[in-house]
Image (cartoon, rainbow, N blue to C red; front, side, top):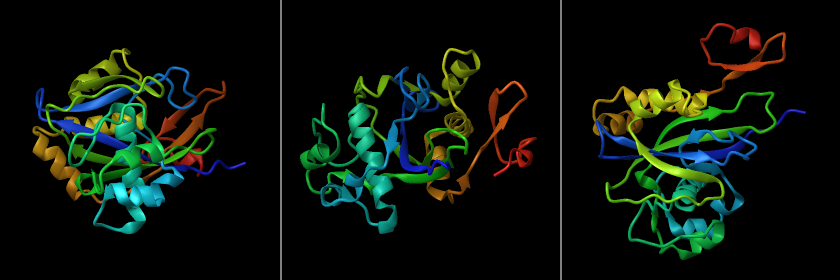
Length: 234
């Protein structure tokens, strides 16, 4: 049976620190059924609550209403997983999630207008869990602290994109293709302003990698344009 991708949102939080800037990454719980142990950016699935009245009251968004649930989920997940509030004021959301988190926020306290929608990745067919994920970019202050919810994610780390890629190349970090692709794009920016401008001007396209399974049953992910992509089927 075809697994329908679940809508999801991920946030690349950038800050003016390091050389030339840093991005926040977390480690997914090792026992997680999806990307267990991998280093990722904060994020998660879009839930029904992200389209509800509590989200509408808590999240400020002046753009296309159809995109609201993704942006609300992005801000909610960032707050739930690492305690970062993108918006006005300082709110302690420790231990809160979903409707309880939205209820704790002042009206319009989460600012979705600050998010830049950069890309859209879909988990390949053939995997038991699939997500249709929108990646957003936002700048946060250098004084913003990040903490782990210690349930879904651990070890929040501010790191330069090149350092993260080096850790992946050395085998110290598990970094899956979508995460690596964004790190490589960030690493091309010489300054934070360049990364933010690229995200702000981006016209997101839907990227759908495919699985290639060899004679031994081992599988690998191929990207559009890679050798073997067309042969892998839809």
